[in-house]
Image (cartoon, rainbow, N blue to C red; front, side, top):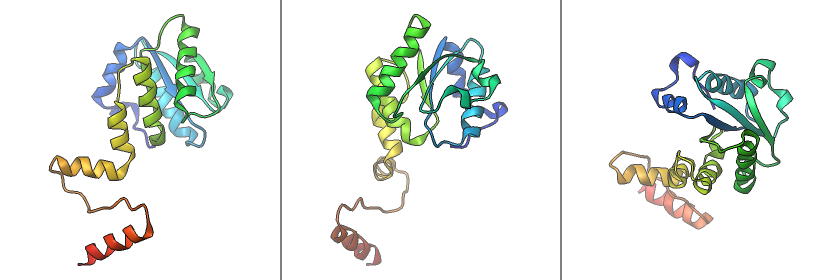
Length: 171
């Protein structure tokens, strides 16, 4: 993921200023510079209390970022919805209350994060919208249904389906 400098953070992040508690999900393998930039940006939003769960140990983060994190929960698999839900509840327990928002920067995490938000009753991107975002064939179908042009596609589950579709494209 590529993150924007603080000066260009979109207006929708103003919603974060209304959240007193925020949990950020991180996944190993994401470029650490992106995670650090994201965490620094969110930590600068006035009134936000920042909690992080990650597959990586917290000591991999720079000191200035670690000092802004008020709760941390490690997990083995950041794509496992059950683990994410448990970790978010753990962050809430560390704070003596609940978490207001759940965010993550990794595209592959958007469905499990949406599932966790749904199970926890938190606002944010719905599971259906996250699936539309993650599953490109589904996204193209949704865009086409709303009148936006998309390249023709086929979600082929067999070689024969792929060959048939290729023949249709070639006329």
